[in-house]
Amino acid sequence: MKPARTLAAVLAEGTVVLDGGLSNQLKAQGCDLSDELWSARLLVDDPRQIEAAHAAYVRAGAQVLITSSYQATFEGFAQRGVARDEASALLGRSVELARAAGETGERDVWVAASVGPYGAMLADGSEYRGRYGLSVAELERFHRPRIEALAAAGPDVLALETVPDADEAEALLRAADGCGVPVWLSYSIAGDHTRAGQPLADAFALAAGNDSVIAVGINCCEPGDTDRAVEIAASVTGKPVVVYPNSGEEWDAVARGWRGEAAFDASRLRSWQDAGARLVGGCCRVGPGEIAELSALAAR
Image (cartoon, rainbow, N blue to C red):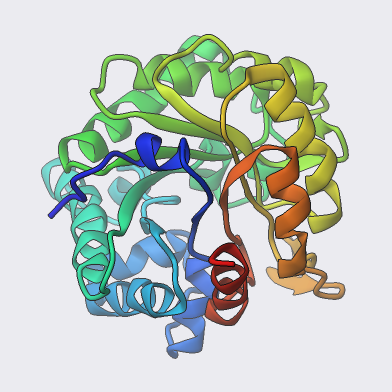
């Protein structure tokens, strides 16, 4: 059952805590994600593991659960022999699993249906570069059917997330227009630019006048890049800011592994809040322990 209040209404009053990385929690549960569909494979093979991962974040204090649909696309499922009707049902299942997990807690939990970038479907690291060689119109045609399927499942919000390129952000916003579900728009960044190299001020400006966008911000980036990005997002759009960086380690798409040192620090919450952040959490390699720390700080 959906919470009685909208997420946008709650954001107007204070900070809301997101979950952390779904894939790292699934791995902690013993799941094998060595597949081009990544965590979306479990929508077919073992959906109970996805619900259990969501529930771990509910226990940690997460108030928003992001679905396992980040890498789930009609095209990706088709390559595995999954028919279109079944793929649509699997996208809907991602919302249902998060909703069921949210109901295991004692307070309201909202569901954000993940809409990852085109590059996530390619599974070749281009989700961190953008510039796919496709037009805005072509990207819009790619994203619209998945957005429609997810919206039909009744999430509280669509998370247009890990977007590397302002052109793709424009396509996603067009594809989501009229779907009946509010959205947040979240870029992956490097410094004060998108991964594709556009200034963040220009990228955030795409959402400034769009009433369907309830928050704008960044995710799956270095924790050290977040403070300035939050400030830019708030000043350009006047909207609540969403921020959920990764652990600070870097994904090596060739070796298909993480390298570097973890740098996620829950104490950044205060600086994020001061700059305008209202949706806070973690992305890759940030687990229930870190989300519990964020939740405890947010409650003070």
